[in-house]
Length: 313
Image: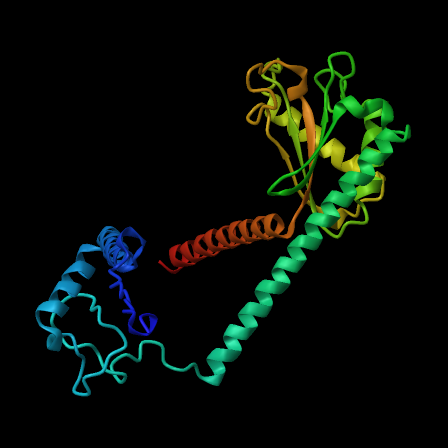
């Protein structure tokens, strides 16, 4: 019976927050991280905004109602570009009115013309490079130009494909002091003429000399000599099959455009330059020729007018 009266003891343990194993510190840390993120975002905004934008933000927080445009109280952005005047309405903001059908057609035509111009320019450059490639292959394959490879220089410039035939110290292109072509110079020009004869572009031919003065008692100078040599090259190209209509310009430049500026007396400065002109260069040349003809015609008309006035008096 004694066992029936035994006292039962129940221990109830009150749990605390668990010390460092609890979750309260995580909440505090999350608040701290959020505050730091907001702080750094604020610093970034202050560093990336302009003074006008900062002033607009300050104005919004000081007086929000002054930023609201119009009477509807709505707006697409809180940030104003500065100033207190009311934002323009949709009717005032018609800075780009709809284009008329005629304007749209003009814009479309301009875009098409621009595209066609780019395509034509690309094809022209490809044609120039193709001609240059043919000439270079002719040199490398051991044909007629191979032995003259050191006297030929090819490059594509802003004017078109330029082919320069230069003098060597022991192999000049012309007889000394004359425009008589050497036999091998005629061979070079014949091969060059064959390569460029099929191109629809016009060509420009210029003669150049070195700085050595041409001694002549009748006033014949390097200017006349370079012009005569350029004209001799023109005749050789015509004999090679180049159409006369494709000759756009023949000029003598004396020593005004040196190849070797450091040594004006270098034989390399004596050369013939043949340029297969691109359309832009050809157009510019034609415009200058037209302006010169018009100017000459105007002077002739003025002269006739003055004569008529003199007769009338």
